[in-house]
Amino acid sequence: MRQIVLATSCVASLMGVAGGGAGVLAGQRDAHLVGRVGAGGRPVADVVVWLDAPGASREPRTRVLEQRNMQFTPRVMAVQVGSTVELPNNDRVFHNVFSFNHGKRFDLGLYPTGATKRITLDRPAVNRLYCNIHPHMAAYIVAVDSPYFATTDEGGIFTMSGVPPGEYTYHAWRSGGHQLQGTVTVGSSTPFEIRWP
Image (cartoon, rainbow, N blue to C red):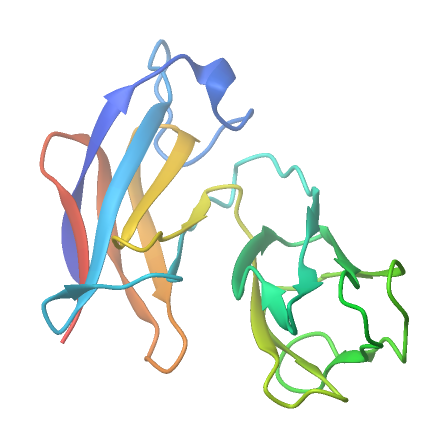
């Protein structure tokens, strides 16, 4: 595994995720983490990065993955295990969202404009979604068993809030690439960078 040290700046813990986590020391405040992901010398968008934190509290939430302009938005979404994802049809045509491999298997059936279907992701997995009517439509929902996760923007930058200082195992996933894993120390001034060759 790679050893990478993560740059942090302290913020009040109420801005982050509540609860403990790996490496928490009395009196230490949680950190605001910023990192950068690249491949082949270029930044990579839509990479999901998360930290293992077995002792941290979990707060599943409801997220929205739209169907608009004949595509899923966002194309890549990260959620915590136990979260519910709403899938509203905001197009003027019927859609039929389904997933059949690796993650949660489901078929939501045909539903019209203005209708919303929901799924709850009950285990860690990469869930690839398709539309049975429009084969060009595809998206990923990455369900992680951690409250500390983020997705990179167009510049390859990601941000996590509320991570207690300490050493963590990190994971990085992107479509079409192998998953990376390593260790990272939260609480140093060295920039955190993850790179695929």
